[in-house]
Length: 356
Image (cartoon, rainbow, N blue to C red; front, top):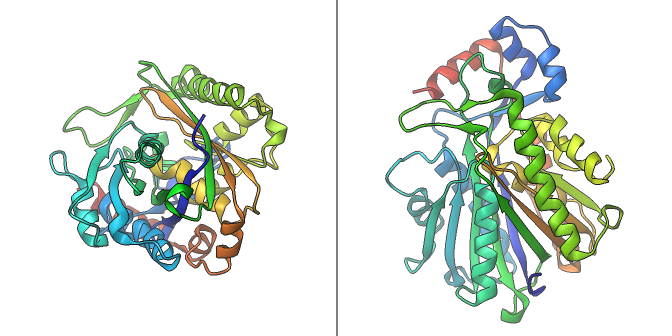
């Protein structure tokens, strides 16, 4: 169990300004809509030619920082930054140093780029919380971001998207007003090679249906059940649940297996509109929940990372969140509504640009 005085004091989301319909991707591949129906994804975000993990991390980090400063937080108190991604722009050079400069964070900063496939973002959140709880940092920033790649013609092309989510962690002991308390977290990991990309390869490889079972479902179930057992809670006692979104069907299936209802599930609604944003996926869905959750809501989150592992979290929202929501702009829902749909020609042009 976690010290309940540790939690989220600010958060922000960022996605590109354009999306492509999965029906357009099917048209580009000369395929019918059967795969679209099986994935349940209607559209996905497309990064611009000048967008990458660093720019999206900066955009999400800026939103969270603006909210943090508006709530009388001090930028010099942020002494930790972790960025989780599987599409860092450099093989040898941290994304974090660029983001740190863009956000104006202190030079005295504990920092690392993290990589654990799609759970690299939740891993950054977990480590940032540990820094705050241990007293090593008063405030810590955690970011999950990706501009996911997919080989043209591969099933992943329908879902591989772009986005970022940023969180600033703090403690009530230090005088911070928590928006959501972290009640508990649990992780699992095994060597299950369902998805990988070797050095110098442009696109990931995967084992098709093997990525579902025994990879995704096994690890998400293990972490989720362990967290439920540790907290003594039953699914019906939880208000919202978020599960990692390689597609829209997997989170629906695992939620049902674990005893959650469709009314509790928030993640599949996000992935249907913006696709799978990999290391940002679970965290973006969490921001969408925080944008609408009333105080006292229990939020269950479980990410998944190929290779394989899962991180599970339990948060409880506070009155401070409800008081601040009326001031918030740039919610994820607003950004999704503002997305511009590109046509087939523009999609192929941008896909080719992002391939180089």
